[in-house]
Image (tube, rainbow, N blue to C red; front, side, top):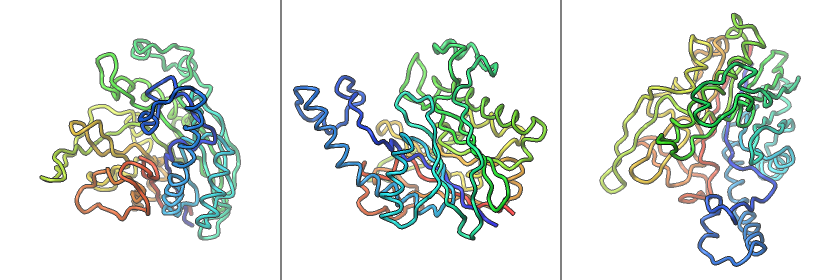
Length: 370
């Protein structure tokens, strides 16, 4: 009995317009920045037209990327709300591709923009085993103080002990597949952002991601028992905005690119994998071929890295010792630099920078659930 499990940051799957760019240039779309817009009313009309025109191509590519996973269950990040998810599933996955997901679940988390984690599930696997929802538990309310995770490093960054730990949520989904229990933990950790306080964006936000990882581990250990949690069937899925390795890119398209694998001294992922608690199964792939995200801040800062994870409990990883995840990169924009031999055929109408399925790539694995 097999199950295809995927995770994908679909990027801003919203059913509302964001007009904050009128007052905050950091949020203004680059297209509108080209024009002399004289009033907020004019800006709102133009932003609505731009968003609608751009969204259709983007969501077609997003749907194609999801369809390519052939997933029975897909964990998603950056979903506005259940209505946005329903509209996307029906209008694109079902009507456009003919492969929909009848079961959809999400809940409001802590993100100020309203982007939450969500899950879509088929009624049954490709092999005909029923997928049944049992319950959903949000942990968005948990604070640093409650879990004893407040540190001087967090205080130095301006955080308070009574603040909520998760920037979005740790959404716990209990289900059964062919009668076999499985628990999913859907996460979307703090993003790295721009440099601040003399630190690069990754270093400046590392204490918060470490706290989020510690909290996820605590939730799982409290649920199953600290000595038994690793032996249960569960998976942590989502965008953790962190990496243990990256592939540094140098050179250019004229003289050729050069790629170098760089190990990181610190990562929040280590909190979860320590002691064999769970396994980052993407690391079963070759080092050069683990990336799910292309990062660039100009030619001096370019790398490929893994931001998107399926972490399997020790027991589930051992049960699936030979399973190697797939990374779906066909929805990447043309600007993404692929190492030699990894190039793929892009989906139709993928642009240089946009439209694109997402900056992230879906990650999917086939699990033996017998």
